[in-house]
Length: 243
Image 1 (cartoon, rainbow, N blue to C red):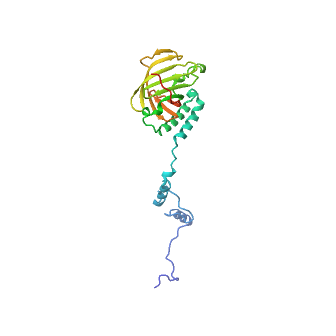
Image 2 (cartoon, one colour):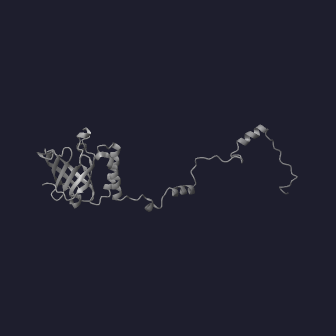
Image 3 (tube, rainbow, N blue to C red):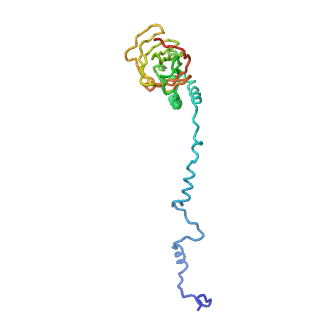
Protein backbone atom coordinates (compact mmCIF):
# COMPACT_ATOMS: atom_id res chain seq x y z
CA UNK A 1 0.00 0.00 0.00
CA UNK A 2 1.38 3.34 -0.99
CA UNK A 3 2.08 5.66 1.96
CA UNK A 4 1.28 8.69 -0.16
CA UNK A 5 -2.25 7.70 -1.23
CA UNK A 6 -4.24 10.91 -1.52
CA UNK A 7 -7.53 9.33 -0.54
CA UNK A 8 -6.39 8.48 2.97
CA UNK A 9 -7.96 10.65 5.62
CA UNK A 10 -5.61 12.33 8.10
CA UNK A 11 -5.57 10.97 11.62
CA UNK A 12 -8.01 12.47 14.07
CA UNK A 13 -6.31 15.36 15.94
CA UNK A 14 -7.81 17.55 18.64
CA UNK A 15 -6.80 21.08 17.62
CA UNK A 16 -6.30 23.71 20.32
CA UNK A 17 -8.39 26.87 20.26
CA UNK A 18 -6.84 29.91 18.52
CA UNK A 19 -5.52 31.50 21.74
CA UNK A 20 -3.74 28.30 22.69
CA UNK A 21 -2.29 28.17 19.21
CA UNK A 22 -0.74 31.59 19.69
CA UNK A 23 0.78 30.50 22.98
CA UNK A 24 2.25 27.41 21.43
CA UNK A 25 3.77 29.52 18.68
CA UNK A 26 5.50 31.75 21.20
CA UNK A 27 6.96 28.72 22.91
CA UNK A 28 8.66 27.46 19.80
CA UNK A 29 12.47 26.97 20.30
CA UNK A 30 13.39 29.00 17.21
CA UNK A 31 12.37 32.46 15.98
CA UNK A 32 9.88 33.19 13.31
CA UNK A 33 11.31 33.13 9.79
CA UNK A 34 10.31 36.79 9.39
CA UNK A 35 12.71 37.92 12.15
CA UNK A 36 16.49 38.01 12.00
CA UNK A 37 18.50 36.33 14.78
CA UNK A 38 19.37 38.72 17.57
CA UNK A 39 23.08 39.64 17.72
CA UNK A 40 24.94 38.44 20.78
CA UNK A 41 28.37 39.14 22.26
CA UNK A 42 29.80 35.85 21.06
CA UNK A 43 33.40 35.82 19.87
CA UNK A 44 34.05 36.48 16.20
CA UNK A 45 35.12 33.57 14.02
CA UNK A 46 38.88 32.91 13.93
CA UNK A 47 39.09 34.31 10.41
CA UNK A 48 37.74 37.73 11.54
CA UNK A 49 40.06 37.85 14.52
CA UNK A 50 42.99 37.07 12.24
CA UNK A 51 42.03 39.92 9.90
CA UNK A 52 41.84 42.37 12.80
CA UNK A 53 45.28 41.29 14.02
CA UNK A 54 46.79 41.73 10.59
CA UNK A 55 45.28 45.21 10.25
CA UNK A 56 46.98 46.33 13.50
CA UNK A 57 50.46 45.12 12.58
CA UNK A 58 52.88 47.08 10.41
CA UNK A 59 55.10 44.97 8.20
CA UNK A 60 57.18 47.97 7.04
CA UNK A 61 58.68 49.53 10.21
CA UNK A 62 62.06 50.28 8.70
CA UNK A 63 60.91 53.12 6.43
CA UNK A 64 57.67 54.16 8.15
CA UNK A 65 59.46 55.31 11.32
CA UNK A 66 60.08 59.02 11.82
CA UNK A 67 63.44 60.04 10.42
CA UNK A 68 65.97 61.12 13.07
CA UNK A 69 66.90 64.81 12.89
CA UNK A 70 70.43 66.00 12.25
CA UNK A 71 72.36 68.02 14.86
CA UNK A 72 72.02 71.09 12.62
CA UNK A 73 68.22 70.84 12.60
CA UNK A 74 68.09 70.37 16.37
CA UNK A 75 70.45 73.31 16.98
CA UNK A 76 68.35 75.54 14.75
CA UNK A 77 65.23 74.77 16.78
CA UNK A 78 67.14 75.23 20.05
CA UNK A 79 68.48 78.65 19.07
CA UNK A 80 65.03 79.80 17.90
CA UNK A 81 63.49 78.72 21.21
CA UNK A 82 66.18 80.50 23.24
CA UNK A 83 66.26 83.77 21.28
CA UNK A 84 63.32 85.61 22.96
CA UNK A 85 64.06 84.48 26.54
CA UNK A 86 66.79 86.93 27.65
CA UNK A 87 69.28 84.15 28.45
CA UNK A 88 66.54 82.33 30.38
CA UNK A 89 65.46 85.20 32.64
CA UNK A 90 62.09 85.42 30.86
CA UNK A 91 61.58 81.66 30.53
CA UNK A 92 58.39 80.15 31.94
CA UNK A 93 58.37 76.59 33.34
CA UNK A 94 56.93 75.45 29.99
CA UNK A 95 59.77 77.22 28.15
CA UNK A 96 62.32 75.56 30.41
CA UNK A 97 60.79 72.14 29.84
CA UNK A 98 60.72 72.60 26.07
CA UNK A 99 64.34 73.77 25.92
CA UNK A 100 65.45 70.93 28.17
CA UNK A 101 63.76 68.42 25.82
CA UNK A 102 65.46 69.93 22.76
CA UNK A 103 68.80 69.94 24.58
CA UNK A 104 68.36 66.26 25.46
CA UNK A 105 67.66 65.48 21.82
CA UNK A 106 70.88 67.26 20.91
CA UNK A 107 72.81 65.46 23.65
CA UNK A 108 71.61 62.14 22.22
CA UNK A 109 73.47 62.82 18.94
CA UNK A 110 76.66 64.10 20.58
CA UNK A 111 79.63 62.93 18.52
CA UNK A 112 82.36 64.16 20.92
CA UNK A 113 82.32 61.51 23.65
CA UNK A 114 85.34 62.86 25.55
CA UNK A 115 85.00 66.67 25.40
CA UNK A 116 87.81 67.44 27.85
CA UNK A 117 90.18 65.64 25.49
CA UNK A 118 88.99 67.67 22.48
CA UNK A 119 90.44 70.95 21.22
CA UNK A 120 86.87 72.07 20.45
CA UNK A 121 86.32 72.92 24.10
CA UNK A 122 89.16 75.47 24.28
CA UNK A 123 88.36 79.19 23.98
CA UNK A 124 85.77 81.77 25.00
CA UNK A 125 82.09 80.85 24.95
CA UNK A 126 79.09 83.17 25.26
CA UNK A 127 76.34 82.06 27.64
CA UNK A 128 73.07 82.23 25.68
CA UNK A 129 70.79 80.30 28.05
CA UNK A 130 70.79 78.98 31.61
CA UNK A 131 68.41 77.94 34.36
CA UNK A 132 70.82 79.15 37.07
CA UNK A 133 69.10 81.79 39.21
CA UNK A 134 72.42 82.83 40.76
CA UNK A 135 73.68 83.86 37.31
CA UNK A 136 70.43 85.38 36.02
CA UNK A 137 69.66 87.23 39.29
CA UNK A 138 65.96 87.19 38.42
CA UNK A 139 65.05 88.27 41.95
CA UNK A 140 66.54 91.70 41.23
CA UNK A 141 64.96 94.49 39.19
CA UNK A 142 65.96 94.11 35.58
CA UNK A 143 68.25 97.16 35.55
CA UNK A 144 70.31 95.63 38.39
CA UNK A 145 70.84 92.28 36.69
CA UNK A 146 73.86 91.43 34.52
CA UNK A 147 72.61 92.97 31.29
CA UNK A 148 75.71 92.63 29.16
CA UNK A 149 77.18 89.54 27.56
CA UNK A 150 78.33 86.76 29.91
CA UNK A 151 81.28 84.61 28.90
CA UNK A 152 82.82 81.37 30.07
CA UNK A 153 86.27 80.31 28.92
CA UNK A 154 87.85 76.88 29.26
CA UNK A 155 91.32 75.60 28.49
CA UNK A 156 91.52 71.84 28.84
CA UNK A 157 95.31 71.73 28.41
CA UNK A 158 95.90 73.90 31.52
CA UNK A 159 92.68 72.79 33.30
CA UNK A 160 91.62 76.38 33.86
CA UNK A 161 88.22 78.08 33.54
CA UNK A 162 86.99 81.66 33.77
CA UNK A 163 83.55 83.28 34.06
CA UNK A 164 83.21 86.90 32.94
CA UNK A 165 80.28 89.29 33.28
CA UNK A 166 80.22 92.53 31.31
CA UNK A 167 77.90 95.52 31.80
CA UNK A 168 77.25 96.77 34.45
CA UNK A 169 79.48 94.89 36.93
CA UNK A 170 82.35 93.36 34.92
CA UNK A 171 82.85 90.72 37.62
CA UNK A 172 85.15 87.78 36.93
CA UNK A 173 86.11 84.51 38.60
CA UNK A 174 88.79 81.97 37.70
CA UNK A 175 88.87 78.30 38.67
CA UNK A 176 90.90 75.12 38.53
CA UNK A 177 89.37 72.08 36.89
CA UNK A 178 89.86 68.64 38.42
CA UNK A 179 88.87 65.89 35.95
CA UNK A 180 86.46 63.24 37.25
CA UNK A 181 86.24 61.60 33.83
CA UNK A 182 86.49 62.73 30.19
CA UNK A 183 83.09 64.52 30.42
CA UNK A 184 82.88 65.81 33.99
CA UNK A 185 85.14 68.02 36.10
CA UNK A 186 85.18 69.38 39.61
CA UNK A 187 85.33 73.19 39.50
CA UNK A 188 87.33 74.84 42.29
CA UNK A 189 87.09 78.67 42.17
CA UNK A 190 90.23 80.48 43.30
CA UNK A 191 89.95 84.23 42.62
CA UNK A 192 87.10 86.70 42.16
CA UNK A 193 87.59 90.11 40.59
CA UNK A 194 85.01 92.71 41.55
CA UNK A 195 84.42 95.21 38.72
CA UNK A 196 87.19 93.33 36.94
CA UNK A 197 89.83 95.02 39.13
CA UNK A 198 89.65 94.11 42.83
CA UNK A 199 90.89 90.53 43.45
CA UNK A 200 89.30 88.54 46.28
CA UNK A 201 90.27 85.00 47.19
CA UNK A 202 87.38 82.61 46.71
CA UNK A 203 86.02 80.90 49.85
CA UNK A 204 86.62 77.20 50.28
CA UNK A 205 82.97 76.43 49.56
CA UNK A 206 83.31 78.00 46.12
CA UNK A 207 83.20 74.79 44.12
CA UNK A 208 80.92 72.68 42.01
CA UNK A 209 80.83 70.16 39.17
CA UNK A 210 80.34 70.61 35.44
CA UNK A 211 79.54 68.00 32.81
CA UNK A 212 79.85 68.68 29.08
CA UNK A 213 76.94 66.83 27.46
CA UNK A 214 77.21 68.19 23.90
CA UNK A 215 80.12 69.78 22.06
CA UNK A 216 80.90 70.89 18.53
CA UNK A 217 82.69 73.89 16.99
CA UNK A 218 79.65 76.15 17.50
CA UNK A 219 77.59 75.00 20.50
CA UNK A 220 78.32 73.60 23.94
CA UNK A 221 75.72 72.17 26.31
CA UNK A 222 76.68 71.68 29.95
CA UNK A 223 74.90 70.56 33.12
CA UNK A 224 75.86 71.45 36.67
CA UNK A 225 75.71 69.38 39.84
CA UNK A 226 72.64 71.36 41.02
CA UNK A 227 70.65 70.42 37.93
CA UNK A 228 71.18 73.67 36.04
CA UNK A 229 71.41 73.71 32.26
CA UNK A 230 73.93 75.90 30.41
CA UNK A 231 73.95 76.49 26.65
CA UNK A 232 76.83 78.45 25.13
CA UNK A 233 78.08 79.43 21.68
CA UNK A 234 81.70 79.77 20.66
CA UNK A 235 82.94 83.34 20.10
CA UNK A 236 86.78 83.10 20.30
CA UNK A 237 88.58 79.73 20.05
CA UNK A 238 91.97 81.43 20.49
CA UNK A 239 91.23 82.91 23.93
CA UNK A 240 93.43 81.66 26.80
CA UNK A 241 92.39 81.62 30.47
CA UNK A 242 94.94 83.34 32.74
CA UNK A 243 97.06 80.94 34.71
